[in-house]
Image (cartoon, rainbow, N blue to C red):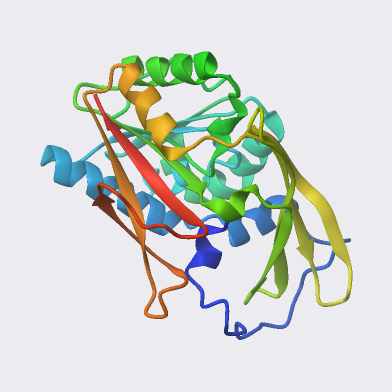
Amino acid sequence: MPSKSARKKDKNKKPKKKKSKYSAKSADKYELYQLAVQSPEEDIEFLADLYRRLRHKKARHFREDFSGTCLLTSHWISRGPRYTAEAFDIDPEPLQWGARHNLQPLGPAAERATLHNKDARETSDKAPDIRCAQNFSYWVFKTRNEMLDYFRRSREDLAPGGIFVVDLHGGPECFEAMEEETELEEGFSYVWDQDEYWPITSEAKFHIHFRFPDGSEWRHAFSYDWRLWGLTELREILEDAGFARVDCYWEGTDEDGESGNGVFTREDKGENCLSYVAYLVAQK
């Protein structure tokens, strides 16, 4: 996926490299994914600040759908002793990895996080103030009925005044077969591979590869079989799911006008660009 961390870098400049400790033989794919794709500090701050501005109080209970290694969950509970979280994922492997690498180092604070090896459509133990689905993972739902059902369940699950936040990407480039490589300062390259797209069904296949300074490569470290959903149709499905209001938060650009700057503000129309990332914020 277009990496949030990568978007914050100037792609015309080579990052200052560290001596790499990574190779295809020794690397951990979950560690690489977190470094290349995720930006947990920025994401959690955006979500917490957004709720505070909308509700004039602090959100306390957080839910992360399709959580993978529950990195956002770990950062949420790190905010303080009154912060609790739940993480949902049907794959036990990344959950176990996240429990070991992201939660256990937090010590007793980890007890404020509950990991569910369950479908994201299942109900929370406690109604969340903020519920999110990041990195386009909810695109695993390929039909309108499936997506509507997921959005309805998400709305019903929220605490009073809760918000449901999903990210998405779009633009003409997302339909093209292409590989985009980003060199990271940690000493390896992240490759987003848009492999196949079928316009009649909007189904698509994507892969993540990693390349290393020793010439080795980890191909298909992660693969995704999704439907490419449009911003407008997702917004309309959220409205049909019963949310009182749905807003789009659009990413701004750097001074060069070409790269995203990681700053998201509410917009009504957006900007016609080749590739974009945005949030949809649905209020109960």
